Amino acid sequence: MKFQAKVTTPAQINSIKTGCIVIALFEENQLSTSAETIDNACNGYITKLMTRGDANGCAGKSLLLTGLHGVKAERILLIGMGKKGETSAKQFIDGVTAAIKVLKDGPATEVYYFLSEVAVVNKETSWAIRQQVEVSDAALYTLDQFKRKKSPAVALKNIQISTSNKIAVAQGVATARGVTLAKDLSNLPGNLCTPSYLAEQAEQLDQTFSNIKTKVLNEAEMEKLGMGSLLSVSRGSRQPAKLIVMQYSGGNKGDQPVALVGKGLTFDSGGISLKPGPQMDEMKYDMCGGASVFGTIQAAAELKLPINIVAVIPSSENMPDGDANKPGDIVTSMSGQTIEILNTDAEGRLILCDALTYTAKFKPAIVIDIATLTGACIIALGGQASGLMANHQPLADALLDAGQKCGDRVWQLPIWDEYQEQLKSPFADMQNIGGREAGTITAACFLSRFTKEYHWAHLDIAGTAWISGANKGATGRPVPLLMQYLIDLANTK
Image (cartoon, rainbow, N blue to C red; front, side, top):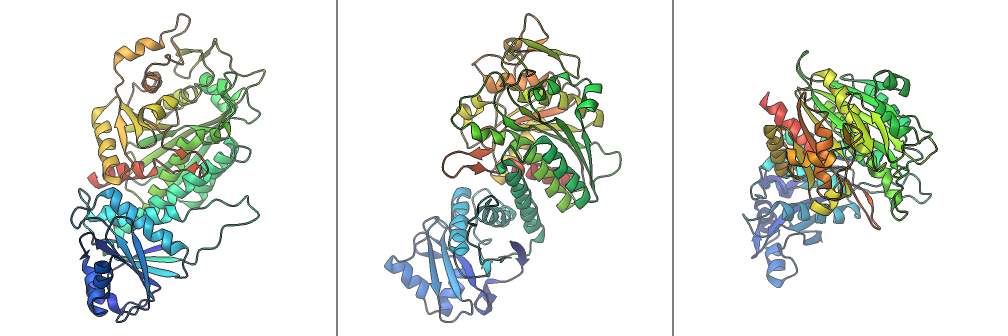
């Protein structure tokens, strides 16, 4: 799909030759500026429809009109946006979603969105512009490469957005493409998307972008570095572990980078602490944190953000085997700290801790790790917000603000010292679980023991990375959050 910014005033709308023009209506029979222009050209036809009740401004309602007198567009799509001046972010997104649902099943190859003129409460116009791109692109996403019968081809190829803000459109396009990459990687089955496959995709980004350099560490190299915790997880698998490192150089040489560390567990059976059978197929999504890092660094490279980024993705499978971790085993991490493994299904933190230690070598300004880490986070926050914990409040505040701006929101949880007590082990420096209480927090407390050298935040995306059920699939979150944070950071520079 091609998205373009097009400088077009409402006064010019009647002369646009296109497959469809999308305009906003509001409750109480009120029209947007563009809708008023079209209504005047067709002798008040839209007003008559609203008066009769055939069209209304309720958020998410739509009505497609064809052959309208006085306009050159083949179709006019009316979209409800709630009360004028009171449109909420959700109502706006519902409106764009309703529009693209109609358009993707229609014959129009090109459309014009005149939705940027809708005032959204507590949101800047640039947000509305980006949402038109990101929401539309997400609604058109399919993954049918393994089906003999493919999804019907969509006629729509080009969406013009009425705005002069080309930067906002470009940001929306890059973010949408990053989300798509994250979805594609996450939705692939575990027999194809292995650690080696992820490493190949990282090398592909290296070849595609001159400002991305990739290095992949194999198990022998990780063993030399003393990554006993990470390698203990891969021992149960026939797939060798990989430590994937991608460096994006957009800032000045010597500028401290932002480090993104993504959990890349390409399949998690639970190991010896085997997971229940139902929905175990969804454990291919245990690498969504790593996938989001792929999507984010690609988007940053497309936008040529003036910052440096280091992406570190520890990737492995967690499988039951004669050589797999056993409850009660003790391993030594790269940091030298020892870990008693009480539950082999708490493996994400075992691969992340060595990756976090390794990341310190880049002297990062800040580090954000992203992981589908705990089921407890799903119980606490559901699928609406990702969990956020940090050892540096300004970093946490910046992520909270970015989440509010873009709608990919997070909720901060504490990591007080009192919670560290739950990780005490009689035989090692720590154990890898802290019991049922505060499971999300104690997992973050575990990681915090490996992040003392830098400012760090942890995003638990277990509830937001994918949806279950008949329409199961990856969401691509938190690529929008990370991109908003990086864009904000770049703007400060």
